[in-house]
Image (tube, rainbow, N blue to C red; front, side):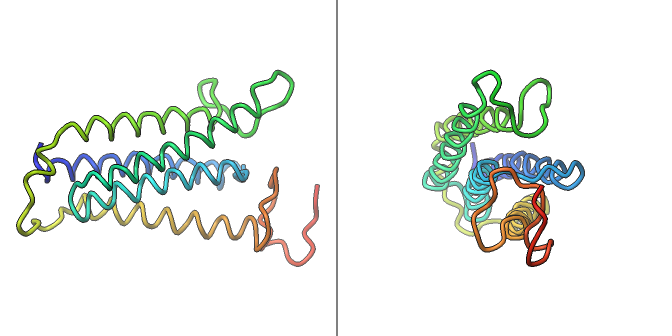
Length: 188
Protein backbone atom coordinates (compact mmCIF):
# COMPACT_ATOMS: atom_id res chain seq x y z
CA UNK A 1 0.00 0.00 0.00
CA UNK A 2 1.44 3.34 -1.01
CA UNK A 3 1.39 6.37 1.28
CA UNK A 4 -1.11 8.13 -0.99
CA UNK A 5 -3.44 5.12 -0.90
CA UNK A 6 -3.13 5.04 2.89
CA UNK A 7 -4.00 8.75 3.02
CA UNK A 8 -7.08 8.11 0.92
CA UNK A 9 -8.17 5.22 3.16
CA UNK A 10 -7.67 7.42 6.21
CA UNK A 11 -9.80 10.11 4.56
CA UNK A 12 -12.54 7.51 3.98
CA UNK A 13 -12.28 6.59 7.67
CA UNK A 14 -12.51 10.27 8.51
CA UNK A 15 -15.69 10.46 6.45
CA UNK A 16 -17.14 7.48 8.34
CA UNK A 17 -16.38 9.03 11.74
CA UNK A 18 -17.79 12.35 10.53
CA UNK A 19 -21.01 10.63 9.45
CA UNK A 20 -21.39 9.20 12.96
CA UNK A 21 -21.00 12.69 14.45
CA UNK A 22 -23.41 14.13 11.87
CA UNK A 23 -26.00 11.49 12.80
CA UNK A 24 -25.57 12.43 16.48
CA UNK A 25 -26.10 16.11 15.65
CA UNK A 26 -29.17 15.36 13.56
CA UNK A 27 -30.65 13.42 16.46
CA UNK A 28 -29.80 16.27 18.81
CA UNK A 29 -31.19 19.04 16.61
CA UNK A 30 -34.10 17.39 14.80
CA UNK A 31 -35.38 15.09 17.55
CA UNK A 32 -34.37 17.31 20.46
CA UNK A 33 -32.49 14.53 22.26
CA UNK A 34 -29.67 16.29 24.05
CA UNK A 35 -26.61 14.12 24.69
CA UNK A 36 -25.98 12.93 28.23
CA UNK A 37 -22.50 13.24 29.79
CA UNK A 38 -21.56 9.70 28.69
CA UNK A 39 -22.76 10.47 25.16
CA UNK A 40 -20.55 13.55 25.15
CA UNK A 41 -17.57 11.45 26.24
CA UNK A 42 -18.27 9.03 23.39
CA UNK A 43 -18.19 12.00 21.02
CA UNK A 44 -14.78 12.86 22.48
CA UNK A 45 -13.67 9.33 21.56
CA UNK A 46 -14.89 9.84 18.00
CA UNK A 47 -13.17 13.22 17.77
CA UNK A 48 -9.91 11.71 19.04
CA UNK A 49 -10.16 9.01 16.37
CA UNK A 50 -10.85 11.71 13.80
CA UNK A 51 -7.76 13.59 14.98
CA UNK A 52 -5.52 10.58 14.40
CA UNK A 53 -7.02 9.96 10.97
CA UNK A 54 -6.64 13.65 10.09
CA UNK A 55 -2.97 13.51 11.12
CA UNK A 56 -2.48 10.61 8.70
CA UNK A 57 -4.25 12.55 5.96
CA UNK A 58 -2.29 15.75 6.53
CA UNK A 59 1.20 14.47 7.35
CA UNK A 60 1.17 10.98 5.88
CA UNK A 61 0.70 7.63 7.58
CA UNK A 62 2.60 7.08 10.80
CA UNK A 63 2.22 4.34 13.43
CA UNK A 64 1.85 7.01 16.13
CA UNK A 65 -1.13 8.51 14.35
CA UNK A 66 -2.77 5.09 14.23
CA UNK A 67 -1.99 4.82 17.95
CA UNK A 68 -3.99 8.01 18.58
CA UNK A 69 -6.92 6.52 16.68
CA UNK A 70 -6.78 3.19 18.50
CA UNK A 71 -6.42 4.73 21.97
CA UNK A 72 -9.27 7.16 21.30
CA UNK A 73 -11.50 4.35 20.06
CA UNK A 74 -10.62 2.26 23.13
CA UNK A 75 -11.54 5.22 25.37
CA UNK A 76 -14.85 5.69 23.54
CA UNK A 77 -15.52 1.96 23.67
CA UNK A 78 -14.98 1.89 27.44
CA UNK A 79 -17.42 4.78 27.86
CA UNK A 80 -19.92 2.93 25.66
CA UNK A 81 -19.54 -0.22 27.75
CA UNK A 82 -20.08 1.83 30.91
CA UNK A 83 -23.30 3.23 29.47
CA UNK A 84 -24.48 -0.18 28.26
CA UNK A 85 -23.85 -1.67 31.71
CA UNK A 86 -25.88 1.15 33.28
CA UNK A 87 -28.91 0.11 31.23
CA UNK A 88 -28.48 -3.64 31.00
CA UNK A 89 -30.58 -4.55 34.03
CA UNK A 90 -34.26 -4.95 33.10
CA UNK A 91 -36.38 -2.07 34.35
CA UNK A 92 -33.53 0.45 34.57
CA UNK A 93 -34.64 2.21 31.40
CA UNK A 94 -32.59 3.38 28.48
CA UNK A 95 -31.33 6.67 27.14
CA UNK A 96 -32.16 7.97 23.69
CA UNK A 97 -33.78 6.35 20.68
CA UNK A 98 -33.07 2.91 19.28
CA UNK A 99 -32.09 2.10 15.70
CA UNK A 100 -32.68 -1.47 14.55
CA UNK A 101 -33.17 -2.50 18.17
CA UNK A 102 -29.89 -1.05 19.47
CA UNK A 103 -29.42 2.25 21.24
CA UNK A 104 -26.79 4.76 20.13
CA UNK A 105 -24.34 3.73 22.82
CA UNK A 106 -24.51 0.10 21.62
CA UNK A 107 -23.91 1.22 18.05
CA UNK A 108 -21.05 3.40 19.26
CA UNK A 109 -19.37 0.36 20.82
CA UNK A 110 -19.65 -1.53 17.53
CA UNK A 111 -18.23 1.42 15.57
CA UNK A 112 -15.36 1.88 18.02
CA UNK A 113 -14.57 -1.84 17.65
CA UNK A 114 -14.57 -1.48 13.86
CA UNK A 115 -12.22 1.52 14.12
CA UNK A 116 -9.75 -0.46 16.24
CA UNK A 117 -9.86 -3.45 13.88
CA UNK A 118 -9.53 -1.24 10.79
CA UNK A 119 -6.49 0.60 12.13
CA UNK A 120 -4.89 -2.61 13.34
CA UNK A 121 -5.33 -4.06 9.85
CA UNK A 122 -3.82 -0.97 8.23
CA UNK A 123 -0.77 -1.27 10.48
CA UNK A 124 0.12 -4.56 8.75
CA UNK A 125 0.82 -2.68 5.50
CA UNK A 126 4.31 -1.49 6.40
CA UNK A 127 5.10 -0.20 2.92
CA UNK A 128 2.99 2.88 3.66
CA UNK A 129 5.63 3.83 6.26
CA UNK A 130 8.72 2.66 4.34
CA UNK A 131 8.21 4.89 1.31
CA UNK A 132 8.44 8.45 2.55
CA UNK A 133 7.26 10.99 0.06
CA UNK A 134 10.03 13.49 -0.64
CA UNK A 135 7.49 16.23 -1.19
CA UNK A 136 3.89 15.20 -0.59
CA UNK A 137 1.78 15.79 -3.65
CA UNK A 138 -0.95 18.36 -3.38
CA UNK A 139 -3.74 17.08 -1.25
CA UNK A 140 -6.77 16.19 -3.26
CA UNK A 141 -10.02 18.03 -2.75
CA UNK A 142 -11.48 14.96 -1.03
CA UNK A 143 -8.67 14.82 1.55
CA UNK A 144 -9.00 18.52 2.31
CA UNK A 145 -12.80 18.34 2.47
CA UNK A 146 -12.75 15.43 4.94
CA UNK A 147 -10.25 17.20 7.19
CA UNK A 148 -12.30 20.43 7.15
CA UNK A 149 -15.52 18.49 7.81
CA UNK A 150 -14.02 16.72 10.83
CA UNK A 151 -12.59 19.97 12.21
CA UNK A 152 -15.95 21.71 11.77
CA UNK A 153 -17.76 18.89 13.58
CA UNK A 154 -15.25 19.03 16.45
CA UNK A 155 -15.83 22.78 16.79
CA UNK A 156 -19.62 22.33 16.61
CA UNK A 157 -19.47 19.64 19.29
CA UNK A 158 -17.52 21.96 21.57
CA UNK A 159 -19.95 24.84 21.05
CA UNK A 160 -22.96 22.57 21.54
CA UNK A 161 -21.51 21.16 24.76
CA UNK A 162 -20.88 24.62 26.20
CA UNK A 163 -24.41 25.69 25.28
CA UNK A 164 -25.84 22.54 26.87
CA UNK A 165 -23.78 22.44 30.06
CA UNK A 166 -22.76 26.03 30.63
CA UNK A 167 -19.77 26.48 32.92
CA UNK A 168 -20.79 23.72 35.31
CA UNK A 169 -21.29 20.00 35.19
CA UNK A 170 -23.56 18.59 32.52
CA UNK A 171 -26.90 17.36 33.86
CA UNK A 172 -27.45 13.58 33.90
CA UNK A 173 -30.62 13.89 31.87
CA UNK A 174 -30.37 17.16 29.93
CA UNK A 175 -33.58 18.69 28.61
CA UNK A 176 -32.53 22.28 27.87
CA UNK A 177 -29.50 24.20 26.71
CA UNK A 178 -28.37 25.87 29.95
CA UNK A 179 -26.83 28.95 28.31
CA UNK A 180 -29.87 29.58 26.13
CA UNK A 181 -32.36 29.53 29.02
CA UNK A 182 -31.23 32.59 30.97
CA UNK A 183 -30.14 32.84 34.61
CA UNK A 184 -32.78 30.54 36.15
CA UNK A 185 -33.83 27.92 33.61
CA UNK A 186 -37.00 25.99 34.45
CA UNK A 187 -36.36 22.38 35.49
CA UNK A 188 -38.94 19.79 34.55
